Length: 149
Image 1 (cartoon, rainbow, N blue to C red):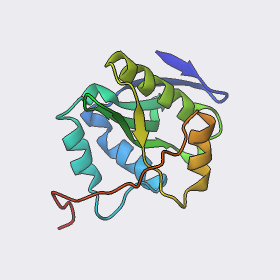
Image 2: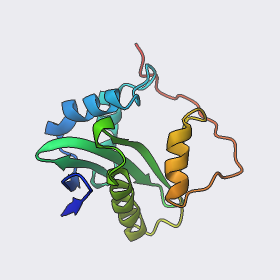
Image 3: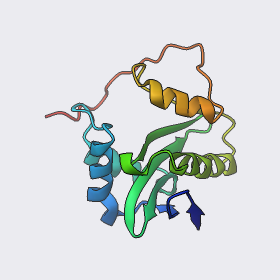
């Protein structure tokens, strides 16, 4: 279903494997790729679990945004929300988040979590405008399968 931004209509749809290169390029341009996370492996892993919660947004047949979500039966998580820099400030990120929030609610998800790098003030402000608030928690992580070779 096409959604409107103040730029052009954006179509949000499920990711397909043919989108891989364009999505990785999007993530690179949005500075989301890190040496310890192989984006191809992240995509392959996502396609094995709830692939319907991996969405892309396209305008004129070009991928301009993405969002990857999951629900474990207790909490939902969002990763890789990205909008090409030249398409920001038009509501596309909000549209992607609204779509994924709706999909998670339909799964019965009561709460959505996400992580933002503490130095990324612009993105923290974006999520605050969408109604997200900082939880009083410390985020911890442990790499179980290293991506770097």
